[in-house]
Image (cartoon, rainbow, N blue to C red; front, side, top):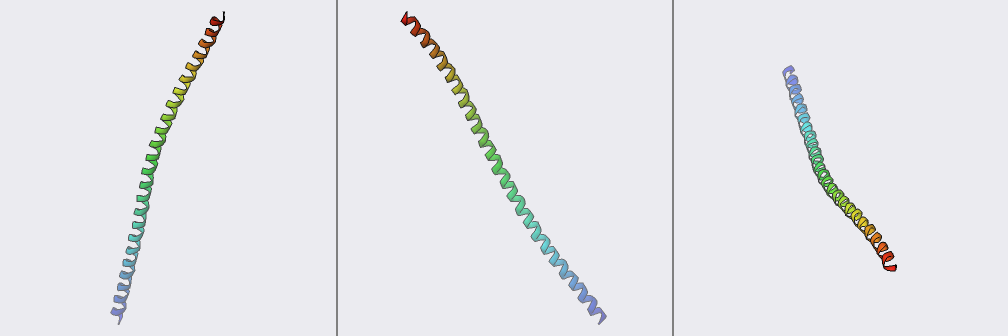
Length: 89
């Protein structure tokens, strides 16, 4: 009878160990899934940053060309005003 109790306790412990191992595997899988999602999110963020940098560069180029156009406009305006004075004399 005593041996049966011991055997029953051992089997019970083994069952508990198996259950714990299954739970640990489930938790590990959940963690792996979370990690995969984080990696995917990181890739999306990297892609977005590259796009933002490209857009920023385009905006900078636009601003520089606009600045040059304004300078050219100002020079042309000065020339036209001088030309008007000379033509008016």
